[in-house]
Amino acid sequence: MMILVGSLVGVFQVALYAPARNAMMMNTPEAPTSIGEAISQSKPALGKAFLLVFITSTVIAVGSGCCGIPGIIAFFLLWPARYLVIARGMDLSSGINASMDVGKKYWLLILLMMVAIFVMALGMGIVLGIIGAINGAIAVGLISAKLPLPAIVVVTSILGFG
Picture 1 (tube, rainbow, N blue to C red):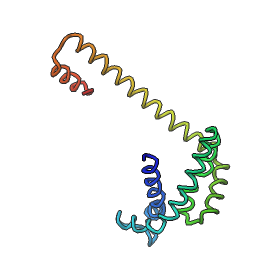
Picture 2 (picture 1 turned 180 degrees about the horizontal axis):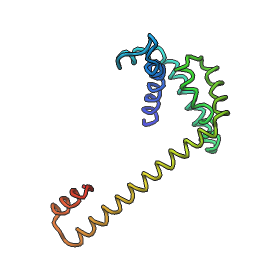
Picture 3 (picture 1 turned 30 degrees about the horizontal axis):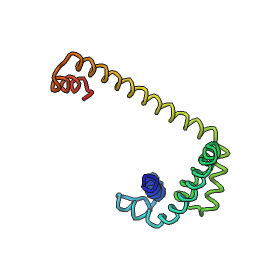
Picture 4 (picture 1 turned 45 degrees about the vertical axis):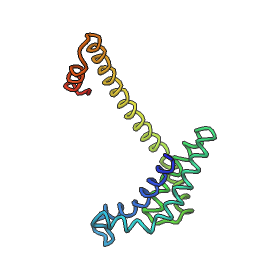
């Protein structure tokens, strides 16, 4: 179920690339002026976006299922296709080919960005883990002191843990 919901969200995200690109180029006559206009501009791209997300996600999933490394390589090579096909108006085959060229050319930059995102997520997990450990230590101290539950809730709420 989560995969289906994620895929549908991905399709709408990809379909909105062209209106988003037009909105960033304010001088163009096709720049949307409202969210409703951006959604109406994305409707013609929904079919192409669905097919594109299905193809790229399937190739990445099969590659990931094989060993993991082929999935990562497929991700590097195919992910730019979503932008190239929808926002640049390419057809599927030329967009996927151009995406593979971009992926081959900038693989190191893509890898560095992924490592940076991983390091930031890891750092956030460590910080949240430390905060949770502090909360647990304080709660254990309060419970072992045999304080009533309302007092424990008040103290942990004041400290920002409740």
